[in-house]
Image (cartoon, rainbow, N blue to C red; front, side):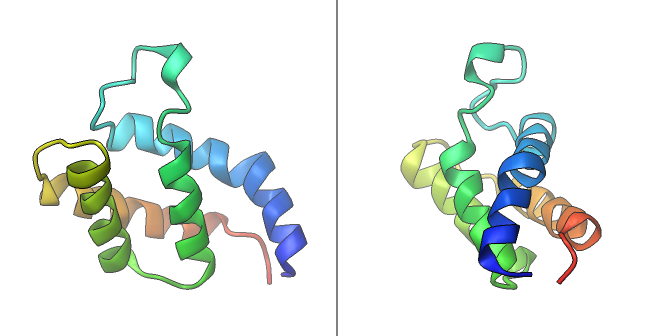
Length: 100
């Protein structure tokens, strides 16, 4: 799939679905019950989307999420949560990504 088509899919379908996954299964900032902050992770998820499109696997995604958690959010490390979410994201993308 061309980049333009992927971006359309990402904006309409991919990012909203990944946002929901992040809030339900990762949520280091506890935004689950705050609708006003539902997009709090979007800047990080945008990068995750680019990583997925480039074929990066769960190990690299988990490493990135760990950096987000500890450096950008200044929270304690939680490798298990980051790895679990990265595995879930990779599986989701394998099923939901647009056709090539």
